[in-house]
Image (cartoon, rainbow, N blue to C red; front, top):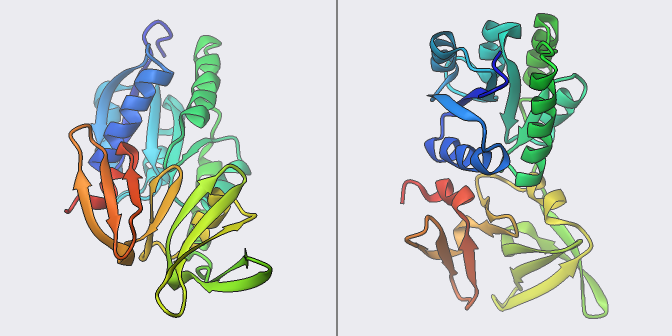
Length: 262
């Protein structure tokens, strides 16, 4: 493996997510050269055989050949970093082993930590630490956890001097406020209301129905049914206007793929 000019492959079936990770790597690891980009696991293996990169960033869930299956074919010939959107069960599986992983949406601080680990291994010329047995076990663990737990149905919040159970379906959006979360919801009369709860957005987001809610910014999760209009900006961001509310929610470029078909 080359340590003077390390090379990498990025595999993800979402083009915007591949591009986003590549931009973030340019910041976190300016000396890294991306030599291959793949849309699925089979293409990742083919590109690896042609380019032989030092590092492979593999999305776990890709059509056809999965990221874990592609990793098994690449073997110890490269350092592997798995990228997953399924924080609730996949991360637990990765954490039990010695494999590097990133959770979507990838955060720069976490990426920088992973880059530091990879750079240390490359500089010491340490071999890739995974084994075929570990990858088989990981595939089994992910298979067992493939069905996520039931989605959150109620949010308990303090409203004035009382405690109220807010139906998740009545929530328009959630906004991160440090260690708290602002819940913007509608009461029985359809009136726009807000409440603050002692849970972080990072804790709440994985519990929401992904068919109804989407994270659109590191500080915002929106109910897709509450969206009136999405306006794309020239700088690869967007703005969301909601039904019956004056709030305008930002969409960062990392999450713009949510509206890729619009």
